[in-house]
Length: 193
Image (tube, rainbow, N blue to C red; front, side, top):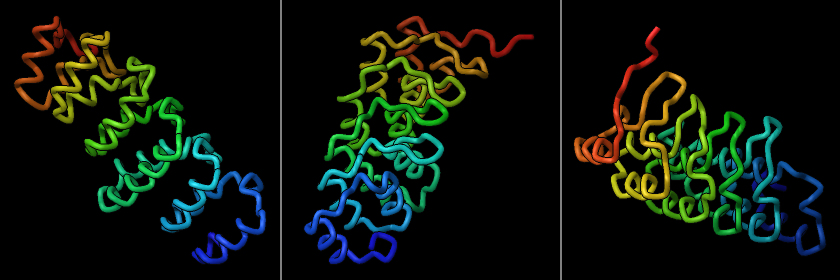
């Protein structure tokens, strides 16, 4: 019923007691097939909003990664992410490459999703792909207020990614650069050999 996009049949099956636990990929299927109404209904009726796909990627991370990587589908995938957040998805589950929901939300640029994910994020110093942190992504995408919040909460202003870049080197604006430097952030040397 999900594959066919038949919302009425999905509702009928759920009313008759169909188990959502029988198909752990059901939300992935609905999202990947563009079945937003069905996706919303399934999430609201107890489908696993923290489920992982065969690659081990949590569905929230998958939705945010898709929004970040496919600009033409950004708004669609952000809608799916919002449904997952509305239904209690855990923002602290990392993706297959260690990217967190916060790092990916920053790449997407949705202030609403960033705010919602940020409020529930426990590990602000987590490192994602290429050892990038939320502070680096906030600096890169121009979120000065979030940069300030992250630094005040202990983010490392001189932490390095796997290429040797520090947060100040990601700065999108002179104001972010000045702020990070005022907190001791430096550029240092990049991969000196």
